[in-house]
Image (cartoon, rainbow, N blue to C red; front, side, top):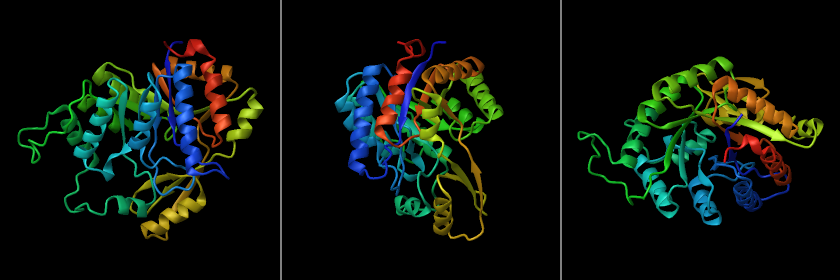
Length: 333
């Protein structure tokens, strides 16, 4: 099978390391990914986390663009609910002017942090008039393309500079509704398989997007390769995801029961429910990982995978992408 491989980096901070160590590792990983022929390198956004250093992907993107020359670099993604669409458009138009043809603007819907972080990020918002996510994304698209409706209250506000080529616009989601929104706005869509690996939901989301656009979404997932299956399992087997259910209907994925309790406390609730799940991870030898990617590509018509490597230590993450790149026929030129 022929498909492209890309990478998502959360800049994890292993025990005993610092945020500076984690970000230096992210830069080194991006440079190595370029040498190995990966198509994209995305930076995630997480707030108020002792385990992850990537709070401002737009800053890391600029730095990595300056340290590389060919690989596409982008956000996976910017958490738009916190920000002015106009400002996001300006930031990514600057990036696209600095590195034409190499910038991806990936947008996510999740908060990317605990409730107090969200409160701090949105402290100056007028909550009485705050638009929903679909409206924010529509405004962002208008500022990027210069196509705000004539009757829009902000018509005439032009997001500058005007780059030689706009950043590629990509919505990250895990539902048919997200796929439909991306298609309606003419955006690329990445299905977040590491958040929702239900085959029926995947199939429906792909069907919605493909029928509307004629294109296949990207597919993001957890994958980790090592020299032996036992070694691979030893590095990721402790990974767990807890789904937190709040009384107001919110569902949030967190990494531990302590994080679930803290999220609930900051949300001001004492009654909540958690559900432990084992994330879907393709792990094993590089040959095994490749066979599984081949299978998924064939089943869903996937032309590009975005791989999130679910281990914290730099050496193991680096070795994993080197082993995956060794399966050269799996990475399209």
